[in-house]
Length: 342
Image 1 (tube, rainbow, N blue to C red):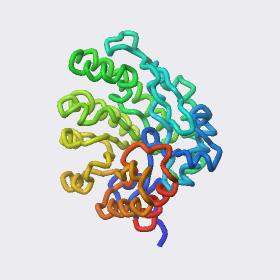
Image 2 (spheres, one colour):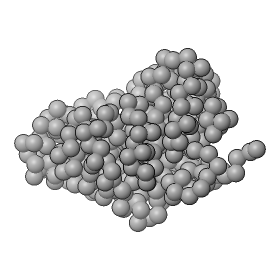
Image 3 (cartoon, one colour):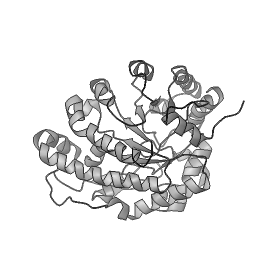
């Protein structure tokens, strides 16, 4: 029996808590970038060049869809776009190494020079992403385009040295709140622009906003209100939102249940089956170990994928960022298992 729904319909029905034929199978881009070396070598569409050319970015997104078996387009292919637009210097990496922050823009959250106004959308890299998103959404209307943005805490920690930034959450609360509000304003405008240009869903990855780093009090004070502000803005446009939080969530679990996103994506260490039992209304996403995808055997990957199906996880996806050296054979073992048995 074939699929009853297109990939786009399946994902939207899942996020809207409607019936579907099987779990969606996605890799949302940004932190979870599936443009692995083997895909790029097979097709000749490569990074870092695709960060700077809209047509090439769209071609690479199609390659990832076709070669891996994931059922979406996920853009952009890194987490540096927002921080670069707001002032940080970026090393664009190579075929095997993703972009990274080379130099943070500010020495402190107290820097009053930071007062951007729609800075992200004015950059060439933003134009490249929007061109790719628009092109893909029009050319392949049945495949969801996921616009992936970097969360407020993680963007801020790419604008100020992360250790300094985290200390200032304690020492300079008023300025930290001001700084984060400015960052959130920019992210909100960028997310809305992605949606305006055809993104079906917005995925927010905020790896700095983990319980292991922040703890419950700081998460509730800094991360929760700003993530929910982003969600509210997108919901006003009728755009669903996925939120990814890294690491061990036990310390902030009660705070995570207050997030207003349409699905919660978590790391491999989290037992999603138990999480669903504790919060039955929660739409869960994840969480196949990306270490296993990189280093395991295809049959082990297949067994873990089947385990996710048995736990009735709502959206099946990698748990975190994929290594660029992840073998295509392992990714295909993951996606084929879910398509055949879902």
